[in-house]
Image 1: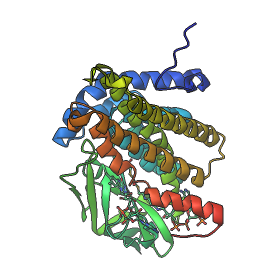
Image 2 (image 1 turned 180 degrees about the vertical axis):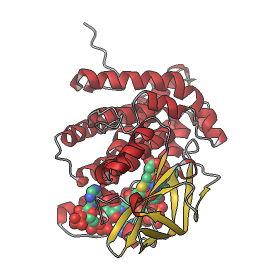
Image 3 (image 1 turned 45 degrees about the horizontal axis):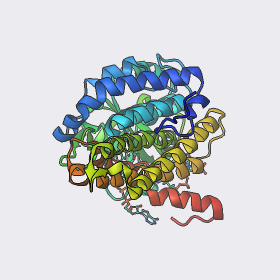
Length: 388
Ligand code: TGC
Ligand code: FAD
């Protein structure tokens, strides 16, 4: 019997997975190895989201995968996490696309939408024929969405929407935007369709991070939105914040994939890099640094798997998600930066994956709540004091 452990899974968490979870992981893993990794370097360099992958991820059932019915796969939370992990092993941009479509657009339509809204959007979104985006952040400060300026007023059977949103994933390619706005009746979610008069989008160019993802701004100038496009099931900030809990959960898994890709790269590289007459892998400090990466990855895997099991039992608290988003993003970005350094000068070349993951993770540690936001959520839980 071999005693060799899998360097990407030192605690053999694979053996904790159910058969269908293993199948999901392996099929997405094959897809990422065959179809995603070979093109992500170029996509990142060209600042282009590889849109042809949308139909392929849809065919694999990865869009809205946690939703039951409406042509969605109805997978459990651990499977959704594994999907995020494998996709982000390829690139955070592709995982972002799937997170936004699934957790930030399809989730609120499913959780808070009318039956007509669900029938209209969910099957089309699951097939990748309709793309969504999620507009919460505004230019004056994303960490504090309660200070949003975007607002809507009733006008007969319609609403008139004004304001703007900033840093929105999928902004310019979306057929529908879930836009959160203040109203006299609380914060409401509006399904704004791409050709509604007064609605415009603009791509944010020249990003140094998440270059294989579309990011943009949304502008609303007296956009007339019919009541049929308002999510009836929620009228408070809890609506958008509950969507964030879904997406943040997926991110805790996703960043493990990015970290694994970086560790894998340095494990290979240091075997062949001969310095001072011996492979770099044979030096103590390099081994310690790679062992540290493995420690961080293993800890992150344990947190996310536990979180997924709690989520599947319906007992998840947002604070638990905050702790894992903070821990796992911090671990992944530290691993990517250290992997970049272990590669020396080669580490700044796109030929190796760490610099791309490192740059992507600068966004991932910021969006869906910055590290500080998540630390303060945990602090509030412990002390009962809101220190924001
Ligand atoms: P607070 O008073 O604490 O809460 C208001 C109501 O919401 C409830 N709640 C949550 N519910 C579900 N999930 C969560 N995570 C929740 N957080 C709070 C809360 O219980 C309360 O309910 P109720 O019934 O009592 O009214 O709200 P606050 O305004 O003090 O906010 C607290 C804070 C700072 C944690 C929150 O504003 C926050 O999370 N800020 C960060 C914003 C953020 O993460 N934005 C992300 C935008 S989307 C994005 O980045 C997409 S990137 C996608 C990609 O490409 O992958
Ligand atoms: P700010 O809120 O201005 O924060 C600036 C700094 O202040 C941070 O370091 C923060 O931690 C710190 N800070 C804030 N509050 C406190 C405090 N109380 N105490 C101490 N420090 C504090 N948003 C969407 O709505 N939809 C999307 O699809 C989306 N996609 C994104 C894609 C990318 C690539 C990026 C970069 C962002 C995206 N965002 C999206 C926006 C993202 O959620 C915000 O950038 C994030 O919430 C932080 O908001 P901000 O950029 O305005 O920073």
